[in-house]
Length: 218
Length: 227
Image (tube, rainbow over all chains, first blue to last red):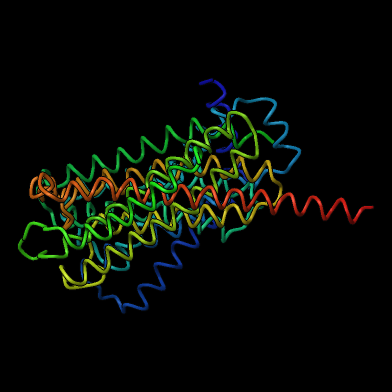
């Protein structure tokens, strides 16, 4: 199974490298959004606003990015894939690929955000941990929701409607943790949030692993 | 009579709850005063919601096991009644909050978690509506239902305990049990939970029968048209 995962992952990365379709679109979307926010706020933004806006942009960019993960394949190719690889390998490969995409996205987001709106973050290590946890979480939840939505006809409204309620409490913890990081608070304050975020990531990962085979049957 | 005894029991329990709930003595607590009586309604609603959503989860898992559309029907109707109880829980909670905390809604993690859970289940219904083919709809909504229930448990049980909260029992506040439940309140509280849950199950059964009758009607109409 590890071989299958490696192979599927390589396929995804190769496709992306050749076409740069998702990555390019994502980059453009993120930078445009940040630029518009910069223009609206006229370059001056207070810390809670900085924090909240950062995660809002991440949220919408992630939903856009991962919505495309299951629709790109045509019917014939999906049937071929179905006969070759086990569903668990498919979902794990997609999750790993989307996590990588999300990490890159969050790095770009942070970079351009700092460029336009300043960098008030005091505890950079904790903020990075927050970014990693957030990216992983978005990727896992959104990959699962995207697979559900792809079976329902790829309506992008459905994707958004299904994902937002699931992400709300996740976002709340994430924003609290990132605010603590920006303010440079002591690590002991952060432990419950880190625990919570890691727990959600783990639970959703296990659920996806168990439930995806039922979705995969054509 | 044997098969409907529980319906009579539900009615009697609820009448008891209403009468005893308002007439029996309750302990006087600071800030809460007499509003503690809302415990019989607000908390019972949430218990009822969780029990019905557990039923929905069980029938979703059953559907994934046996692929019988009846299990799917039972699961979706249980979810509907569960969400209805959830709305009632939110409404009673908001009413209670207005008179004790001063506002209809506060930025509290249990409230946010509860609202997010209701939204998750509303998304479940939207998902069901967007799929036409029966088996596919049943399978996909069963998967989403299992997903939604697990996350709901995280949102309303685990998350509030880890963060600050105004609710009793979470975020460092002692729960109600410490204050007063060892007195008269238990006598009304437990029957209230059982009564409201039985009413919820009754509504669920009626909805299932209605759905089955509608289906039989459509099948009959179809076969008549073809003749």
